Amino acid sequence: MVVKKFPNRFFLFSFFIIVCMFFLTFNAAASIEDHITRTESGFYYTIQKGDTLWDLSEKFSDSPWAWPEMWQYNPHIKNPHLIYPGQKILIYKKEWEGEEKQPVPVMDTPPKKVQTYQSFANINRIGFIREKAVAHLGTIFKVQGDAVLIDNASLVYIYPEPGAPPLSVGSKYTTFRTIDPVSGPETDKDYGVQHFLTGVVEITAVEPEFAMGKVIYSFRDILINDHLMPYEQTSVNIPIKESKQGVVGQIIKPEEDENMIGQYSIVFIDKGEIDGIEPGQSYSIFLHETARPNPEKLTKVYLTPFHIGELIVLHTEKTTSTALITKSAQQIEPGNLVRTLKIDKP
Image (cartoon, rainbow, N blue to C red; front, side):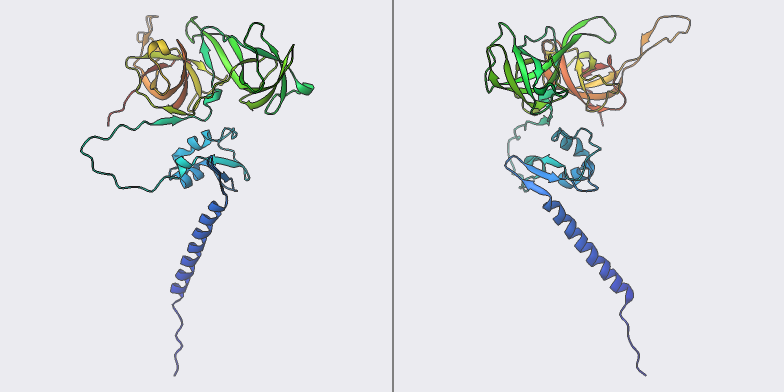
């Protein structure tokens, strides 16, 4: 009697699964590489169906929590939760392609302190509050073709401000408009004039009565009657510095007219250069509520401040500063306290 021996079906099934997983892993890695474009300035990745900034951050930096930095590198992405297949995103080589790890040499002396930086891609579009309005160099009085929307590549006509330094062909200027003097959230104190930056214009022609310019950047809507000031390129990498001890200030208002102020919002605070505030310093944000402990009396007392967030200073003026909220445990509001950075003890 002949007995036929059949191969172990479980073994064959397991082998099939392992082979499939190998090829799927290989194809996934290959597909990511196929969608990366290398240039001198950095790497670009083309968004594929199903991609999210969270997942891409984990793939390129081994941490999904680094997605806000990837978003900052790509200001054309207005909503980080809405990205579409075919979009290209910029990935800086030095951030995502680390060098091979080298053995740490043994040194007899302590190593020098390495300077760290906070990157903020939109640094050139943040505004400020200054005691007096900037003396502008000209005013946009018309857009070519009377277009409703002034954006990138639009041609605009500019009336030079009498007595101001003349506009010159090839020079770049920041367009801006001012908002009425800003008062404190709980007092009538006048902090100055808010300058709302809208874009950058390059002068293409200068005539006796007017000048022409091309919009090369539009940070937000550029309007007729927006003014011009000299353009200054600011580095996106801000050196981190220690916060000034003993600082007690408050948030004046957000830069944009937004109801919800939270992480990644831009705000103004009532402390500046004369208070020792510098770009790169971080400070804690506190909620400082009042209440009536005795219901039979109208007197209110301040309750113990409660830590609700942190901010980093991006720009300073004499008496005010512009800052980015980096952490928020709850909604931030004008009037919230700003103090020297609170260090949580382990």
